[in-house]
Image 1 (spheres, rainbow, N blue to C red):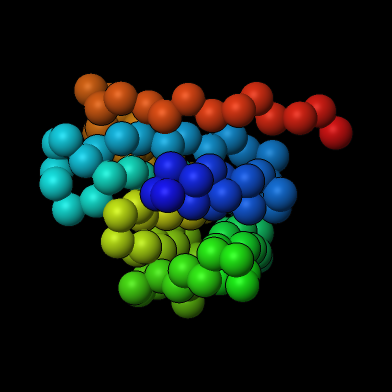
Image 2 (spheres, rainbow, N blue to C red; image 1 turned 90 degrees about the vertical axis):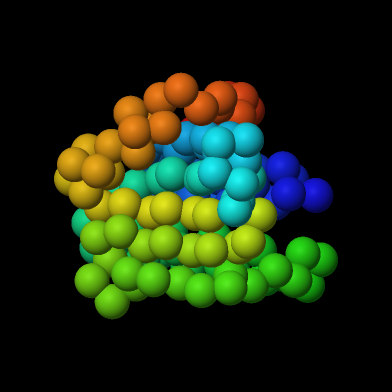
Amino acid sequence: MSAELVLLAVEAAASKTEHDSVVIEVGELIGITDHFVISSGSNERQVRAIAEEVERRLKAPAEGRSPRTIEGLDDARWVLMDYGDFVVHVFLEEARSFYDLERLWGDAPRLELPVRAEA
């Protein structure tokens, strides 16, 4: 079920941004969550829109998942949404480059994502 929800979060993010999302499988390395979903927006408004869309889609009647906590929504540079078995990180583009979680977790496997459909 977690992988399906992770993919739903990725789809939600993709509906609001042109930036690619990455899913890092961290469960074997840290043991407190299974996946990090990393996405980004070009400005604070877009970062908020991505976070709100992820929350909306995961809260839909069929899924019913709410994040345990959401941090960073006020300044919208790095929004962290903790769903327990996965964590969604939505960055402002510059913050994503600065913190570079993809490099930090470079040894962790990546979840293969479906190819984004052409518009």
